[in-house]
Each structure stands twice: as C-alpha cells, then as structure tokens.
Image (cartoon, one colour):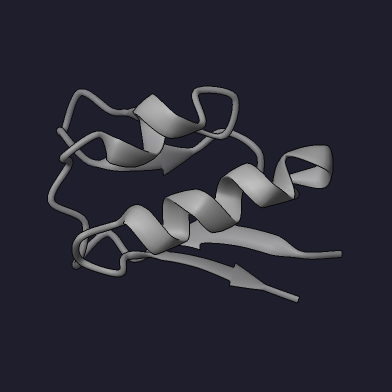
Length: 63
C-alpha cells in the first residue's frame, strides 16, 4: 500500500498541494501542509501532480 507523507521541515505551507488535491491535503493552523489520507487510493495521480508541483519537494509517496 503506498504511503503519502510530508517532510514538515521542508514544507513552507504554500498551499499548492491543497489547491491541487483538497481531498488529500490541507494547510494546518501552523501553516504547514498535512496529509488527510496516507493511502491516496484512486487519487494517486493527483498526489503525483502535487509531488511534481511542490516547490520544496516536501511531499513523498512511498510504495
């Protein structure tokens, strides 16, 4: 099962991931992205787009 996670030290809270995939990510009150679903399931292509779009490469998908 793939696991989606964010390196909080790298995340700048820009919100690109949450804009692209609101079912997978949101911005917390600490202004960092958080993963809503560790297993992206059918949203894996959206997760991959968020990974490509993240300016700090903070989003990871482990197989």
